[in-house]
Image 1 (tube, rainbow, N blue to C red):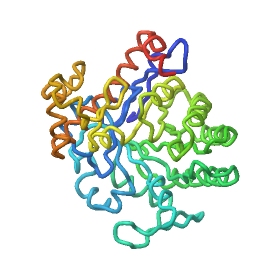
Image 2 (image 1 turned 120 degrees about the vertical axis):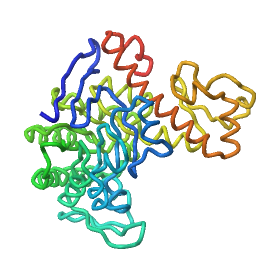
Image 3 (image 1 turned 135 degrees about the horizontal axis):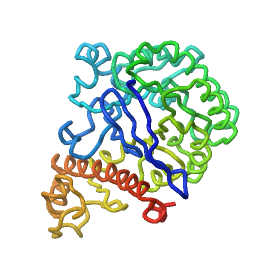
Length: 365
């Protein structure tokens, strides 16, 4: 069987859990942070560097790869794994979030979404079937259903309509999916900040017995407290025997609170975006390496971190690179930041296995 999720351990005091997920391109030990490789590259890092971070699974973007270089070229190359030189598992999103962020450039209909490409101005129609066919061609291990993602401030009726359409589109995605033997199709729970819509969405998804489930629409402008409440409500409703993925979340606090609710997988652009802006993630904090305090600090960025950056260079050198706007500085910080978030979820995993999750990470809850 290509996909198999084994639950190994559950926290005694929370819903936090440890699992092992088998995919066609290897194991994913959960809970786990997934770096984002939007255009078939985690920005600034080679696949060899990415392997050193401990990353097991990465994410790529269907919308962007459809626009450039196009799924036909990637399929001709042998699929995403061959094209980008990454041998581990890959997840592709459906393109829905990106399309719906083009509020002034797109039109929603039951058939799908029509939008004007921000790249070259051409009109593109993306339907559930088209999204799945593109993802089939890309060849990722995990593909996402095409969903409607309303803004965080949308009213109840608007979110209810989007949630219902998301379910109808999911049914069409399932029918269109041509590679269920080697690509796991995840359904997405929408419902905004409204508990009833979230619980109704889960109730509709469960009978479909999908390989995994995602919680979407939680990084689109909602208040953090509302996001936490929705994740805490929704996650325990999802099947215990399937992986659970919280989309677009990747801060320390958000991940700990989500793991405590039973989430297994995360993705976020934070580590490389911060790296490109001279910011390092260290011991739960954000450090701006441009700051003068680092100019004569010759200690490692994080003495406890095993990454190449921390094992080789000083804070003073990183300060110099960032102040000089040298590309190497952004690469080294991105390498460290990805390592930091992957290791953070690894440490949580180890704490759950030792029945020490609340002792070691309870201060984040």
